[in-house]
Length: 241
Image (cartoon, rainbow, N blue to C red; front, side, top):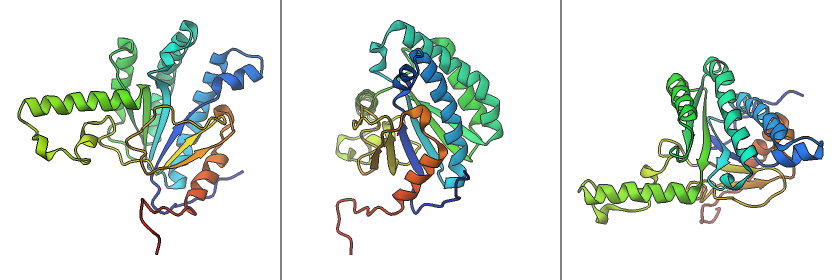
């Protein structure tokens, strides 16, 4: 099935909580990492569909600050999968004009993974067809905490006045300071939780919680959700006239 070329009104940034890889694999009698591998392949399809849907920014939740609580086997497998994904997809991402950014605290990640992340960001920094942001070791509360520490340091250094701090100030210190806020946040797998993802940035986002497990999330489903967004009434606290 072909995805119809859609230019949604005002929607340029979609964020996705990619949930359900483990359950998808277990439903098939396979180990959880098999599901994560299938999920990584699905990412490629969704990224490739973004230009035709008018989506300039796509942010995906790959690994949260809470995911360290999973088994060592799964965590280790995920870290290896991230490395393989970057190695394998670097040239295709460059060729497709995708700019890649990573958000999250990199201090706990293996140096070899961080080096690959840095390199991919550098190699794609001139691309503009799609802006892909990957959240690894990311948690919104952690992000805000780190942002407040950086802001406090600027206050102590005399670079920022307390009187000048307002709701426009904090976003400049967030990991996403170069990105527009998402207009649509999608969570797969039937769970209706935000799970500590882009809490500040998604204050006025529309949410879609769908039952589909992430490895079954097709470009057609994605296109349908983007298309539905165009029919929503967005008041931002006001009243439609």
